[in-house]
Image (tube, rainbow, N blue to C red):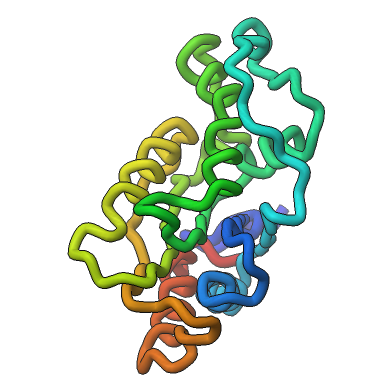
Length: 207
């Protein structure tokens, strides 16, 4: 069997993008698409999940997952759990609503209680592929220019990433962005997003 050159991976890096905005084609969506396009330009395998198009119920805190690590609610979160386990890179995109992530995003995060159980109660590996370091970033916009506008949401995202065994690799955030397509008028935002996506896939991990 021929040997792979040093530093080459046997499979493409899987980059999962999660669109948490309830508004399609808005500022956050545009940023997410550019990030994912940047990752794709590095030959990563990309997938974008749009939460507003999925059936995801809120967590019931019923403790039904405590013995098996499987949520008892049969909805789209079941397959999304699999995607979250398989992702090598995670890009969470959500605008800021009342200093936090959107309701769609928070419902998805809360439903990862079953994954918390797998890690902390059942003491089982969470990631499907443990040979690659898992990293994630947060992409967001907010309408105001408060100095701490993104901090509550970032705290939530970091906590979620910790449960998923994903290291927090930073954020791409823009304040003062409110009107639809406002991000297009920003002098560097879309270019920054594309560059961020490229940086998610180091050359040593490209196929």
